[in-house]
Length: 329
Image (cartoon, rainbow, N blue to C red; front, side, top):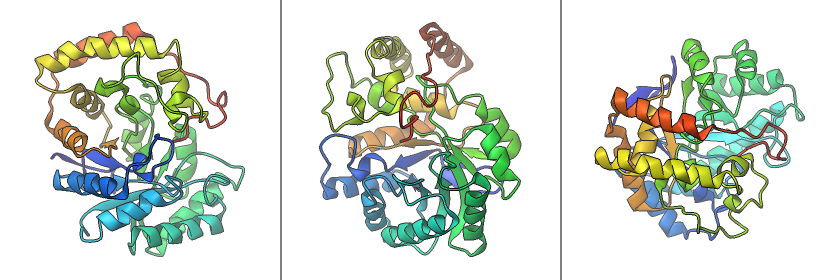
């Protein structure tokens, strides 16, 4: 397993981290039994992953609770979690942020949160400066080690930076969603680590989803949850060209002796400024496959060939605000 430092001041983390959204059991179809989730989590740590990313809203705390159980005997595993604005989360008011952190610590069975993040930008609860000031106070009082943001713009990060250093950014990024690539240079110059979510395009880049695949209504990929990612990745008219890219990537993966998932994760890890990628799965087999992507090395010719395929796809982004949840995962 390779390791990189999270920004200029953060910890050294494995280049692959475990994503706990699906472990929460909400929005992904039939809920995986608790025993299955715990097995997948423990398998990830056995494979060398030394951090896990979760959030208070994943399964209304279930993800944090299961992670707390899985790491009860693994003090070396770093825990990254997030607070969300109301009504989906506890809220971004200064008192809300402190209360949310206390609740997450209880569920995680930890005394300290390693990385605490704002799940998205939302100033309906409070001004960003007030929210970020509350995050900084958590660092000062020792209940949080580092603080970061998710789904933020460079302008919002700069506002936070005036109050306290932004240790990390968690953007949506994959071969099929490159909208946030321009943020990487800014983050590198700012000393902010970047840990993207969705590097496998929520299953599309594994090669396991086909034109015949259907999703139940309780799976967000069916289009029933109002997530922005559905419009770009899975909606009719977008799914077909995305799957065509997946098919075009297969020979590159085969030539390199890797799976499509490993190729896709490696592409993200080869982008300048990336610290690590968040890959979630409740399948031990897929956890092993994802972890092995840490050792994949792509040549300049490989990257040029991939970028040529992606340019032909002509990425189309749905503007922020068009969907009610604005892509918040």
